Image: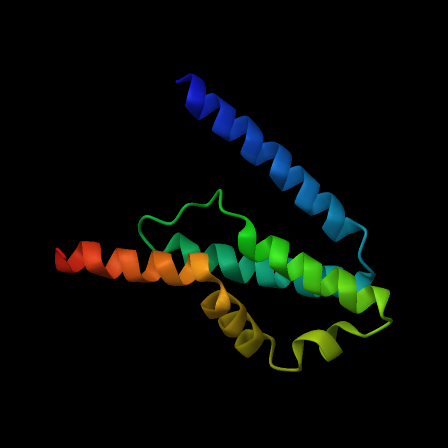
Length: 111
């Protein structure tokens, strides 16, 4: 129980830190970040066994956005105009996402 409580508190602190970073971004970046975050949650909601406390994809995204904003790029210069394709590449390029996908499939196949 103590470990679970530590995980919940740690995840909440990490989440607040990420959200603080997002709020520091320019408005156009915030809009796209929030839409991608919603897309991610909707996607993950339908995937059994996903750890919603794994924020590595959002950390990577914020890093990209912070660099883009620092270099005076518009958000669409960073993502391209096809945001959904950008999301798919971001999710598939993340090793954690790939491992979860493969592990879920193997579990379901009994391997």
